[in-house]
Image (cartoon, rainbow, N blue to C red; front, side, top):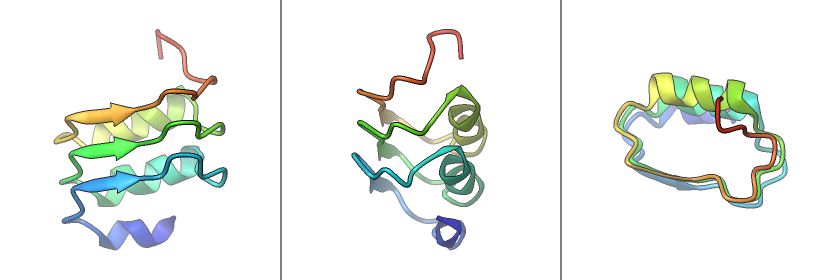
Length: 77
């Protein structure tokens, strides 16, 4: 997912059910996709609160985030 670092103008991304998506992927998205507004991560089983934190720091324009079925996320994370 390091290729996403060059996608600074990307606004929508759907990675639902992609088993390779994990915390490193979310860090890459947060580092390079600063204009992202909508991200679908439904059923991505390998993401945690740490990865979501990296995403939140970099994607400050995010308006819609779907994490349904991401069971390693916590309410406090």
